[in-house]
Image (cartoon, rainbow, N blue to C red; front, side, top):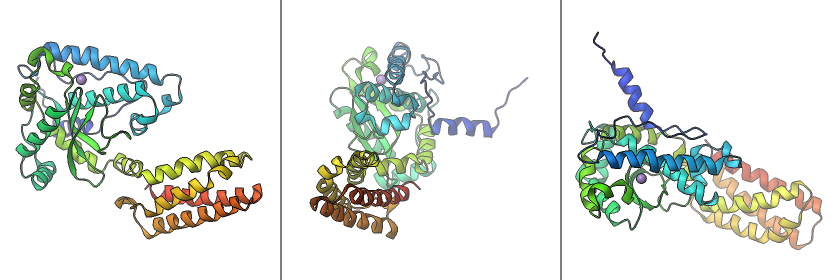
Length: 338
Ligand code: MN
């Protein structure tokens, strides 16, 4: 009997690769092709060691790092967005698992050699040609000192950007200078190419385009444009909001439990952070008269609170003012969440 695959099945396969799903405990994904399939461009032995040992180690070490901790309940996105404060084990192995999962998906023995559709239009509009973006990626990969990755990402303003990161960091992470959703990543750790190419990273970077599947990259581009993660990154990258949030949570929660000492000590710092927030540009996706008004109220409210602290107001007065300020802050948080 002849087996035919109907187009909705193919579309589903491509779409499932567009948005990577990760679930705890994390597991090593199966490769959609044999270890030998990418020869001669990437050799069998490299693929086997890279997938079954290196990637497997990231997965095992990530599971070890989260098990029995608060991080156990978090999604991969949560872990990456907060990587900078979760310790090196989660940062390195969480990144390692995410990055390699993406990497296997965009490689294929039957790679489509050039993008089509929306991604092709975006590349042409921004870079002129596919060759230009490949050159930029090879430059980013070739000049990355030591171990790391070169990326093509969708930024929070829905543009493309070529960048690179060290070790297993990636642009979803709070520690990354360039932020966005990666749609193409090139592994430039020596373990990705050394057996075949030794020190000739440039030769590896020339060969990889033969097995880089633009069909999958294009599907990832389309998925990234409407991925809610993009707004989470945009909010996370608004450091003035994040800085204010830190002081608020470290003073409000003790106050709720009757301890007003933290806000008495930090009311001027809170006022300063609110002023910085008022003067910082509101990210485009969240900008509205409502949010500007709330940010203005936050600045006025924290000045008022600081004044009350300096006048040695009673606990009940400070608690009421801080609670009102906390409510205003929640309005801002809410406006950034949809
Ligand atoms: Mn690797």
